[in-house]
Image 1 (cartoon, rainbow over the protein chains, first blue to last red):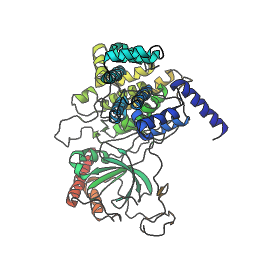
Image 2 (cartoon, chains in turn blue, cyan):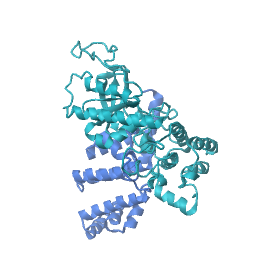
Image 3 (cartoon, rainbow over the protein chains, first blue to last red):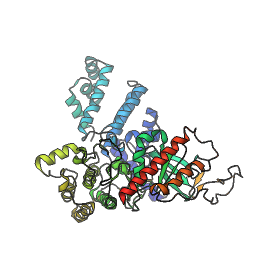
Image 4 (cartoon, one colour):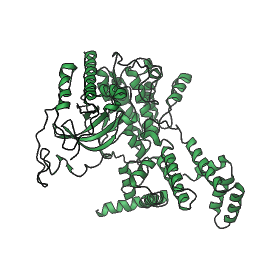
Amino acid sequence: MDAAQQEATARARELQRSWYGEPLGALFRRLIDDLGLNQARLASVLGLSAPMLSQLMSGQRAKIGNPAVVQRVQALQELSHQVADGSVSAAEAAERMEEVKRSSGGSVLNSTQTTASSGAPTVKRVVREIQSLLRSVAAAGDIIDAAGTLAPTHPELAEFLRVYGAGRTAEAVAHYEAHQS
Amino acid sequence: MGEVFAGRYELVDPIGRGGVGEVWRVWDRARRRYAAAKVLKQSHAHTLLLRFVREQALRIDHPHVLAPVSWAADDDRVLFTMDVVYGGSVAHLIGDYGPLPPRFVCVLLDQLLDALTAVHAEGVVHRDIKPANLLLEATGTGPPHLRLSDFGCAMRKGEPRLTETNYVMGTPGYFAPEQMAGEEPDFPADLFAVGLVALYLLAGRKPDAEALVARFLADGVPPPPDEVPAALWDVLARLLAPDPVLRFRGAAEARAALAAAVPLLPPPAAGDERIEVFDQIGPLPPGFGPEGPQGRDVRAPHGPLGAPPRPVPPPMPPTPPRPVGPPLAAPPAGQARHAPRSRRPPPPKRSTAAAVLVVALLCLAVGFWALSAA
């Protein structure tokens, strides 16, 4: 790789850090490890082609062009956290990945499926799943208690628990959307 | 060595699934080149044969049409071949990039309408225009090159229907309203589907055709959707008119209107994503090179391992490019039965008689096609 290319790659990784929190190579590799995937499978769940995934990971390209893919990346990150903390089993994770794959227009590659014509119902569905998952882990009262305990040290996490574990769906949707931009 | 089909096509690797059966990359020993082959199992023949016959019978030579080149039959399967198109479909492009820039979309639409002009000039209605059937050459960052594929639903206008069935062919979501109503296949239905594909490319998601038609019927032409520049919407609205009479009179007219609209589009934004059409099929597997199977002579697979990949004379004469009518189409049936076999044992023969029947049916249907085309 010559110097100009190296520089371009470094710049792309820097941009990725500012847009996605870290370079996509690291982010995607962690998803692959945590969720037991390979690159081809990750590409398929995200709705990216394999060459595009590889360009993003290597920093040849900085930006994920398709906003629906960005949403799926976020959903997978969420899922991998839940797998890591044991709140979602491997079998459930596989099922959830199928849902992520189908979400928000992902099925355009598969002509036999119909898709929602706008992103809104999908956001609601994702939010509902997070809610139902939290509530299957603990009752609303326990979640509020836990949120209270966390609040002094980790206010964002406390807010998250409160909104998804005990708040109304509309509130959770607003929270979800506010954290997508 | 890969399995050899009908003594001529060496199966290399699977590269996808089509409307009928699997699609393989094959090495065509006769033409000495790689091709994509749709393989149909005889056991599926009763439901898919008609699609298969329709598709293989079409011969249109046009840079933006991907039509079958040749066909062959083996004991329990039939296949036909066409060019390998490496860049995936426009659906891959949307997956990778989301909504595409209007000027880029116009290049694709221009090529699609060019292809349709040629197809319609042959009297053929495609009937299944949709993103997955719009393939792309792997042109990288150069201008895109679209190929209209999958003529499994295509029909010659006014052709007698070969089946009793009344059901509608095509893909839900890309139907014209009159197609839904079960009317005779006609060219304007393809134009409507082009309009929907355009919306899909501009918005990055599948349009809601039913809601769209309802809006047109309720209020006339609606204002342009957010993603569609006004000048382009004027063109798309005439593709999407629910009443086929109100659409463009033909693909060529639509193409001219599109060309007139392009200069009115906003210039590309500086921050626009660089669109690259990747090779989605990937390199040849080990044992195959650009000049075909490597390191062995097809006729002597037990020869020295390091034998140079020298040209191998085709074991079979090439299939006639256009098997027309029963008399000419007869030889392939014979060819199927007497073709030299690959050294690997072929899959269990379920019934040679059934395979011959499939081929006979193919011939008959091609005959029908030829007659109705005359």
